Amino acid sequence: MSVEREAMEFDVLIVGGGPSGLAAAIRLKQLAPDASVCLVEKGSEIGAHILSGAVLEPRALDELIPDWRDDPPALATPAAEDRFMFLTETKAYKLPTPPQMNNHGNYIVSLGNVCRWLGAKAEALGVEIYPGFAASETIIEDGVVKGVVAGVMGITKDGEEGPNYQPGMELRARYTLFSEGCRGSLTKKLFETFNLRDGVEPQTFGIGIKELWQVPKANHKPGTIWHSTGWPLKSDTYGGSFLYMLGEDLISTGFVVGLDYPNPWLSPFEEFQRFKTHPSVKPFFEGGKRIAYGARAINEGGFQSIPKLVFPGGMLIGCTAGFLNVPKIKGTHTAMKSGMLAAEAVAAALPNESAPAQLDGYSDAVKNSWIWPELNAVRNIRPGFAKWGLFGGMLNAALETYVTRGNSPWTLAHHKDNESLKKASESEKIAYPKPDGVLTFDRLSSVFLSNTNHEEDQPAHLKLIDPSRWKGVNWDQFASPESRYCPAGVYEAVGVEEGEPRLVINAQNCVHCKTCDIKDPSQNIDWCTPEGAGGPNYIGGM
Image: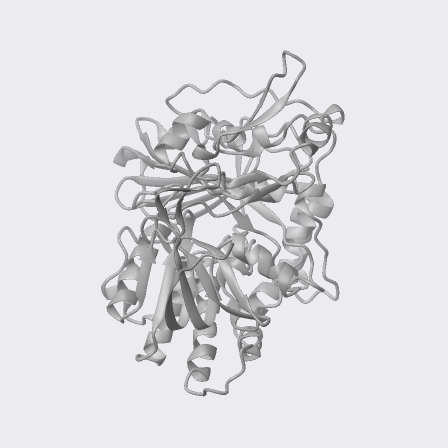
């Protein structure tokens, strides 16, 4: 049965209020002040779902708002000292800082604060911003994207219309820009509908888990940027830490684990907790207090995984397309630049009523911008770690950086993260220590700090495509890896002692990291958008 909805018409619709979407909105209004521009964001406010341990390279921001330093986002802290460490279980060795990780001229920021600041700039230019408005369906007519359905609320768990039911609205536009971030739920379907991933390597991902700490000033040196590799991860698992000192007493710290890891017993959350106990790391947090927590998947495929960026009626921008520079550990500048380039293509087309629905000029603009050579130059570094492990990967990174300088006559391939797990029976079990509640913590107390909330009486946004598949694949072969890779305690294998294991999904805990949608061995878990404003509400320092 079709649903009758009210419709609103715009020149341009932007789905997602991250750096790329906001940069696109601002650039559009700079170039076409009279254009009607709408931006929808599923978080309760702009910045609510933005999570990054972020060092901002200001290149794109300088182009977008040249005088931004006169009124910077809150907590923006100039980068000072870089440290790149290799950890063993008890020692830390300082390594030369790779040139990609040199942060001179950059800023440690709260990316959530940056987005709130950009959102205010966009609204001041006349952009209509609707937070708490989740886009749940793409409108496609005659093979052309015409907008999205957003704001559907009040459907009960049984799929019926509840007392607070709202059918949502059709937000229609001449051009729709998708800036959903990593593993966007609508973008995932666009890939299939328009074959956008044909001819490119699979996207590969990492999970980033982050905490914000308030520490004594004696432990704090503003502008310090500290990264590590090595312990506690095995050499067959890609990952490492970040620790950034911003403001007067805040430390943004986190841990990233490549989702191509092979051991199903591994828990990225627990590896992060172990990391904080290292003798060289623990002193940073002594006397401090953890005040926020979150997790998010990130794209790691880089250059060879960038999909086709345009299709009739729309474009992909930012991390929804995968512009993260992994060796640089930065993607905000490339995401923003992609949004600006898309805006420029749209602004040029709007005055022409006969302009094509598919703006191929955006793809050409990306390839002719500084994004393309930057990502091309480092294309072989991340897959080198997947191919040769930690030490072989480091040697390959040195070769690519100092010898061939990104001009190697080959391009390494990626593989799908969900296909990398070994059988549980063939893998080493990992015994993680119990949390002490001071330095290390459990998942549920962590989720509490993320301010995560979902209306209980709504359809589950985490679904098993085929529930019967879980027992034979996830449990029998891999011992329920989702119960360990999920950083929020969403998945529980119960009934094990009775010999009747089954999966319980605690969807109310979900922090929208999308890891389950990526890492499930048979791609049986589908993450779809819950009601608007559901999920985490990250505070200003995140």
